Length: 85
Image 1 (spheres, rainbow, N blue to C red):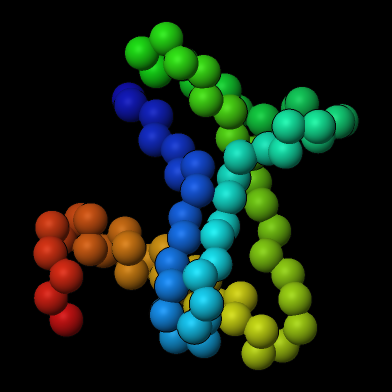
Image 2 (image 1 turned 60 degrees about the vertical axis):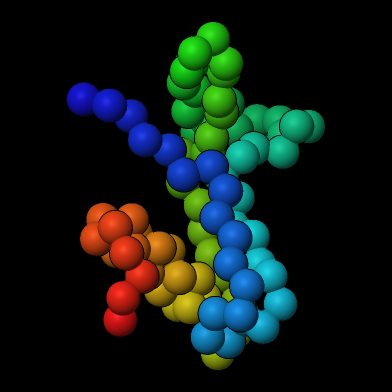
């Protein structure tokens, strides 16, 4: 089975987000103590690292669900192969 990692997702002008936002699963370079939760894959001799989990938090009505909806919309566009509807 092939491994697929989403390293970084960004969107602009989507629902409550007028300005660009970025959701990144790339660990900070100086991150310490989270080695147990970092995935590592080598693709064509290049090593990619990603966090195995993430938490989206914030106050009510701050757009947390819209981030998830944006990722789901992107996924459906990729699976369908077009942007209709």
